[in-house]
Length: 196
Image 1 (spheres, helix red, strand yellow):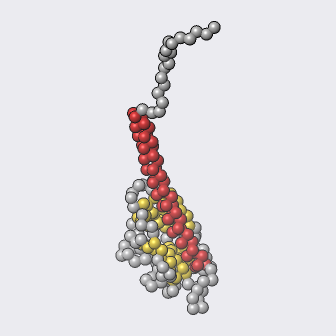
Image 2: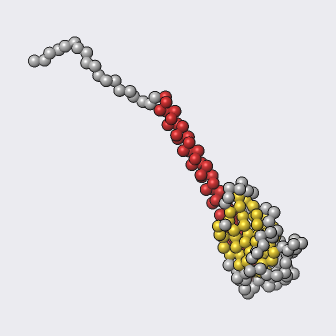
């Protein structure tokens, strides 16, 4: 037999949803984590772009090497050297054809348009075996060798006539986040990109 009673049963009420404080704490944590990730992503992006710019310059030097050792020429002459000319404080660098056969850049020997360095980066040093205060360099290649003819600016700012063993072209981000890369060109013709 069932007994019906009018007694009210007390059930514990459960809260549904979030309180305002819990919601504020969650939003704050998500905002902090997102901010940290965005800051890390920005610096990671700078490293990748700097690496790409360094490889682009190295490939342009390699292109000059290929032009120099292949049968490329104008006016029936195929013996001119080709090279790259780089100045430290300039946002541009040039591919040149050595028309006077002195194995270095001279004004007026540029071929095509100037190559432009991304405005976020700069070449901050050009170094040889024992000096990192060079202001400009010329790297030329001539048939039949793959060897590089490396000329660096001397104290008067003119390109020297003596070959160096290697050069390092050092690049960094202008926002000085500490990241840098260097393009190393050896007299043997080897070209590499390295981390400083």
